Image: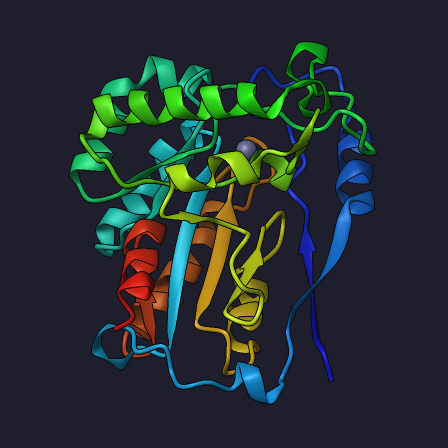
Length: 280
Ligand SMILES: [Zn+2]
């Protein structure tokens, strides 16, 4: 029987939030954009040999933080560093918090956290429900695939200038893929070692916590079938800003992962996917 899980789809404005939108509208938007994803099934095919993570961990956990937000530097980084966890930050170079705090982003990269590509301008489809925050000039349905490739290559170069890394991963803004003339993932995929959210659904599951408790996230992780070897926990705001969870929720999740380090391998998405590609 298929194992079904509900993931709140990431719909938000990465930069220059429209502050005139009422709280009610935001709540409604988030509710309306819940999607159901068939994460995995229990077929014989999915019951393959254990992935073979380091130290026989059962599941790799990729904690990621999208959109380069102040609350991530202020709240997520101290909580991660306190527990010596490494995570991935899918930054938008146009964001105020990226431009104003560039030295801090460089510092966290030097600490071992990952700066991931999330494009330069965070183009999303404007023709989906509750997307009136997407600016006309940045609507994905009006951008050719080549424009997305150019943007994403420049973002890679910019990030390399900051952290020196030549291997990078990508998270598609809003999880959208269809540009003006086709699926742009097809033309950008060779720029990356992995693309978050597009893994084999028998191998990986993904949750976008928004206003939920640590126990909800822990339950999501622990209820995955044995075939799932990677759980992506994709955050945005921590203790503020958009699609947020409280600092207490974030810290409680980290405490749980820290207390169960024999079971969970917490590392950057880059390190996890490099390990997977090496075949163990
Ligand atoms: Zn984003």
